[in-house]
Length: 315
Image (cartoon, rainbow, N blue to C red; front, top):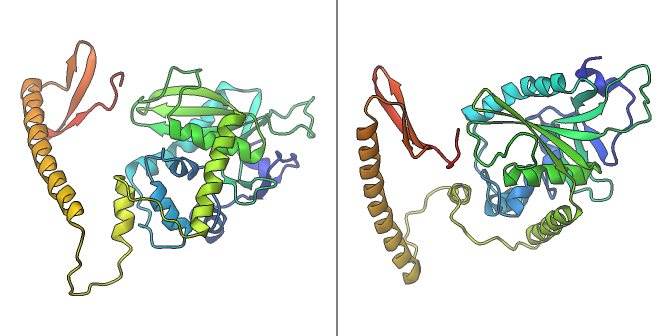
């Protein structure tokens, strides 16, 4: 049986309610994720741990206010393209189990709690296969350019925003284990296992309920330093009026101080990058006592970019 056949096979569902097998980007998919709901990819933003969106930007989305349009980038594109390949690798490593498309779900009682896991894991059909048996666990598939925040394979050490995501998925569907398959740097395949933690799930639920309460009552989060917050504010005005707006003196002082600090930091960064690049010469990497500091890319024989490694233990 192909994993894709699961949608037509009479397997019982987990404890959550299946909304449907929706195609990403379609109107039905968007409808299941918008409004006063919190999805697994949004819960990290609710608690201020998402690298892609801020609490401020998510609040505007849920309030029906303008937000920046989604822009496809190479990381997202290749993550999508490689999802099936990484899932197939997990399947090859676990021949006694079947990883099947999961669909979009909501919690049985909390209709606002939504999740779209990558796969549901079932016992592999066979002579002794019991169709009354529920899905055993979830499978989440990831790709990552570096090994930052990923622990050794077989552990439960994964980036915190992904932990929020899988904890929310398990809480939504009523399952108690998630396997994570990740491809790092295009060749380093690792597996992780995260078990359900009621205390963590309750913390996320409480935060989500307060967040939705603030949306309903128009209590906008404070402006923070997240890029997603700035991009959200950028799309709020509609048009241009030729008039002056008075702003507080204290804000002007912070403006001046921040721009001066930025100029000084930019100069220091340019200098140190120049010194590192000068020492690398024709080499590829700068290291210090075994730690990888930066790497050089080349086009047409000349330096194209100098990039930092983003963690001390980047491989």
